[in-house]
Image 1 (cartoon, rainbow, N blue to C red):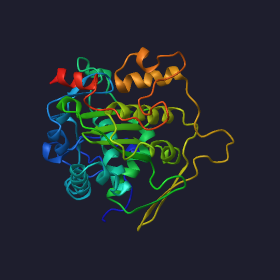
Image 2: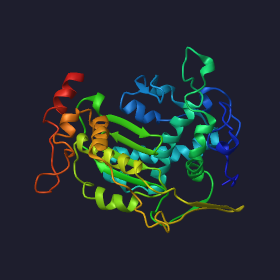
Image 3: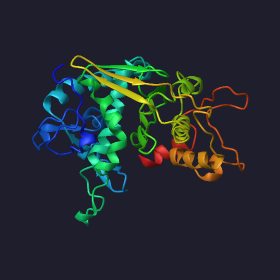
Image 4: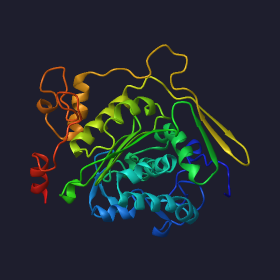
Length: 340
């Protein structure tokens, strides 16, 4: 690969509509030099092209307008082959997506997460007041420098060494039952502060925490129980709430060592636990989880916490077995029919 050095856009605050977000090369300020944050095949498949997405400041923008500057080499050579593979595997189902090289799948979801932030660098926080600043400022991006370096592994030779994971993130794929209503087939959520992503694409559900692998081992214990089951979207939402909440109570800052040579870049993550005797993850209050479940499921507090101090669950039956929820059961089916 040419140009084996890392592009330090965030350290240098090198953000521009005429600079490739991935390599720093010069690009024209036109549609030919733009990469869609959410791939075009996805937008067309789920009829999202003209649908609005809510940004960090609460304003709405059509999905098709979420584009970032990208040079032809990065777009056509490094990103497009990942996009094509994900699209093909998505068509085959969740099992095929789950069997994909995890490093490549990580790059696909990370581009969406990082790309949204990058786009908001150029959007005014208040369109009525151009002097109010943008939704995301250059200083806000500083905490995402390591993620930008990881994203560049699609264009430079990078060797990862992570003590607690196989990739520098925690990534889980699930089978999800697909709603009949087009408006309910797609769902996206993220938590910028705690670097988590929730993505439901028809029959495929993806959860990611960009935490250098902190949730990989505990996630294998918890999430693996539900992988391979045809989850109801509500159940997948509950799993998303768990991943987001666990990221919120992470008690460590991952330690990363990066080495650069003309031939290779090494990216090493030390043990998350380190030498501290304190637990890697803290606990959480039932009230906090109730708020998270309300956000994911759209249910009232009474439904997600019917008894004070105790959260409801849609994942298991009373005997501890994995619960099956039919898509024909209300309220999901009723809601889907009402929105058609």
